Amino acid sequence: MSATLASSCTICDAAPGGCSHRATRYLEDPIVYTQVFNEKGEPAGWRVPDHERHRWDNPVKGTKPAPIGTTPRELVGLRDDLDRVVFLDSNLVALLKEAHERDALRTTRAVESVLKSLANLDNPTGLLAKYLREIASG
Image (cartoon, rainbow, N blue to C red; front, side):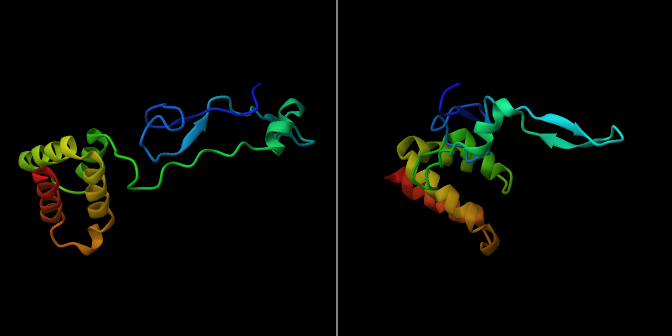
C-alpha cells in the first residue's frame, strides 16, 4: 500500500486536480470495516480491522480544490449550473459559448458571481447577459 491514497471526483471520477468540479471525493481504496455483534448476536456496530488500524489512525489529508474563481471551468459545467436555477434561452447560451471561447476564466467568474448573488437579483439573466457581452466584445 502506498503512503498516499488516491481520491476521485464523485461526478467524473477524475483524480485530484483533474477536473474543475467542487464535488465531494471518494477514496479509491476505502477501509473495509468488520461488523460487531453483542452477546445476543444482534448487530452492535462496526470495528476497524487490525490491518487497517494504521490508515484509520493516520488519515491522509485530501487536496483542497482551487479557490472559486481562480480556475476556468468547462462550458458544460457552467451551463448545467445555470440551467438548474435560471431559464437559458438560445441567445444566452450562444453568448455564454462565445464569451467562454474568448476568456474562460472571466466567464467562469461572471457565472459564479451571478449564481452567488441570485437571491439579491431581480433579473439574474439580464446581469449575466451584460457580463457575457462585455467579455465577448473584448
